[in-house]
Length: 143
Image (cartoon, rainbow, N blue to C red; front, side, top):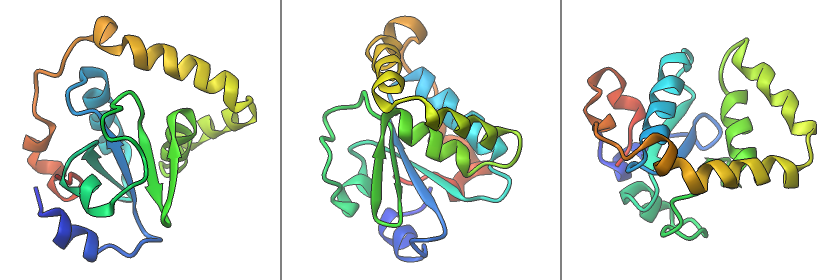
């Protein structure tokens, strides 16, 4: 894992997106691993909500609210279902086809997102692995 200050300074803002996730959530960690395996162009980086990278970027969201995935690129922030769709848009075919769901009104997409987010620990459990130990993906994991 690389120091977030060094890592962020070396990133051209238009090149990579940073996805902030709840590192205590098993569903979130499994999703990050899923994305890392499919990000063949290395366009994504991941960091825990409330971690060092989150603090360095001084994002204007509530770091205590770990129920929200955050997509950060070009200095812009997207939350919840929009963050998921933007993340998938960074992946190669066929995964980017999921962005078709952007036509579904945000209120409907976020309703389902909030339901899963609220119950994710109950449905999937707490994290029992450390994603930062995945050495094959060390360049994509930020603190």
